[in-house]
Amino acid sequence: MTTSSDQLQRLAIPAEKKLRRRSGPVIMVSIAGSVLFGATAVFLFTRHNDNKLISTKSAGPVANIAPAPIVPPKSGDAVLTVSGYIIPRARIEVSPRFQGTVKWIGVKKGDHVKKGDLMVRLEDDEYRSQYDKASGQHALAAANLLNAETNLIRQLDLAKNNVQSQQVLDDARRTRDAADAELRIAKSQVLLAQIYLDWCIIRAPIDGTILEKLVEPDELVVPLSFGGTRGPSTALVSLADLNDLQVEIDVNEADLSKLHLKQHCRVSPEAYPEKKYTGFVAEIAPEANRSKGTLQVKVQIETPNEFLTPELTAKVEFLAD
Image 1 (tube, rainbow, N blue to C red):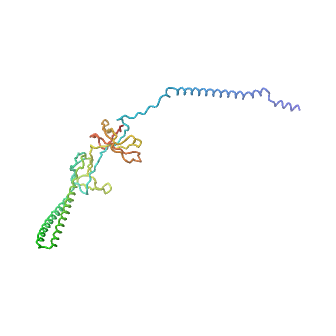
Image 2 (image 1 turned 90 degrees about the vertical axis):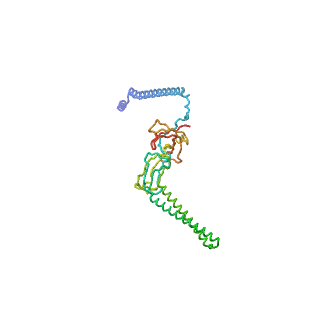
Image 3 (image 1 turned 60 degrees about the vertical axis):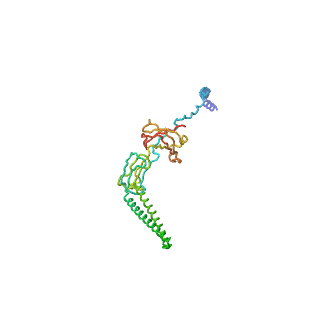
């Protein structure tokens, strides 16, 4: 019994050791709580000061400033600037009316021509022969008509004296009418041959400048293409009036609200940026280009001169009304 009590006493933990072990964790918890409390206090204090600073700033004069009003553009100010290409309003390619061979060409690139000036001659031997033939048939028909009319007059006189029968008189009238019809046919053949002869002479359809010479003498030309790149030429020359120029522009669909027909514009060629020309919106295409999201617009240049060259770039400023 005594032995058991001694063993229990040896296993018991002394009181001072219990106190040390119990006080250690408590002190640690207290320290941790103090640190957490201090951090919270600092955070709240900082947040409070920040809120006061924000409140102070928002209460300042900035809060009382109204947004600036939108000022509309003044008349004559540019509302949109776009680049495009200078083009003639009408470019004409002169083609033959039938297949033929160039006999002579009297113009070259850059020449100025007036309406009606002779530019090209085609070989006309065949058509001149047809004209001579038609003229001979016309003369023969005229002679037959004259003879038929003379015979009809004679038959009328005989019929009055009851010398000839009515049948003979009717035949004379029919012969005269047939001769008259043959004369009209012959006259139309002469006119047709003359038209072909006239078509062998190519004249300028407008006042303008030769942009390109497309054929040479002795070259075969046709009115329609046979396909391919090695066929005969289908045009003789191309020309345009360089006093009637436009600027062709592709305008983004987002900018279309800034444009309208007859709107005034200011044009300057990229080659001569100091040159300024007045113009106006002459054409807005009725259909857009879906793939590019653009609409074609043409600006008419009012007073073009030699500084504006077709196919060069020009800058266009669309002006406010």
